[in-house]
Length: 378
Ligand SMILES: Cc1ncc(COP(=O)(O)O)c(C=O)c1O
Image 1 (cartoon, rainbow, N blue to C red):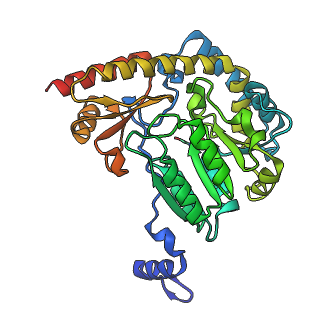
Image 2 (image 1 turned 60 degrees about the horizontal axis):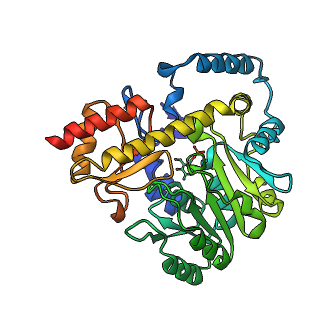
Image 3 (image 1 turned 90 degrees about the vertical axis):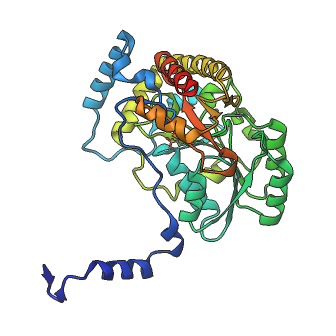
């Protein structure tokens, strides 16, 4: 087809114009890797597998019926109320978030990571995070035109506090991310080390508590008032709502007001709000699943410890990081048996030969242990 101006431009012309126009730093950036739906046992992204229809209990069936009715009566022909008052009230009630603190909702905490980065370090500022950690921090920094500086953890996955403090002094970061417990290592960093980072950081420190439901109550939320530069971020993704997309940020208005100003006007949709309301109203179901996942995690760590050549690292999350003699081969052999986990071997030098194993249902945990035992016996 030709346009009124002449023949349609060739693919090369598109490529040339796009290269010349798009920001340079985007050229090396790719989208977060997401596997297409997996028909077997999926232990890849720390979802709540207990809520899969295949494991439905009478309680789950009732919950889905309530959900269906609420979604059916939702005003999906109208723009959502971005204030989401009912969702926020439920979050405040469930997680003891006092009226003193503001709440900002995001389309998953992924969106909040972008907004926080843009609001603080975007256009030339620096973001620091201990690494290995959640890769979206680096991605969001690059996308926002910020500089990202990763400070390696020690080999036992504790924070290298001296290294971090030195980087903070040299780089004067606008933003520091600390994941508590950390993904992908699963451990909680020392409270004292985090306090030193909070004291030294000249800008904002966000503690990402995505795995808080599995961490036995460890949280910086009750300590917000102690630090003028602290925000706490959480998500409902790890306790049953990964597909709904709802993250939240808690802290003082002085921070959240300007970050909120960057948000798209209707970022959390009517259906997401309706679903989050129903699930938060039935939070005891999700909390029960979190307890089951903690039991599954401990069972998995104990069983991995008995397998030849395997090191399972302590975890306070709903996944276990483990080192294998040949992680690539184990990953492939699990896949052949229908089990999908995350191979992190090439993601960071400290992750050499590691796989991250999400905790599934009790049966899935047993199937994983049996498959690993069989693979490693060969
Ligand atoms: C540490 C951490 N933060 C944030 C997220 C993203 O959560 P959400 O699903 O709310 O975007 C994840 C997801 O794996 C995570 O591990």
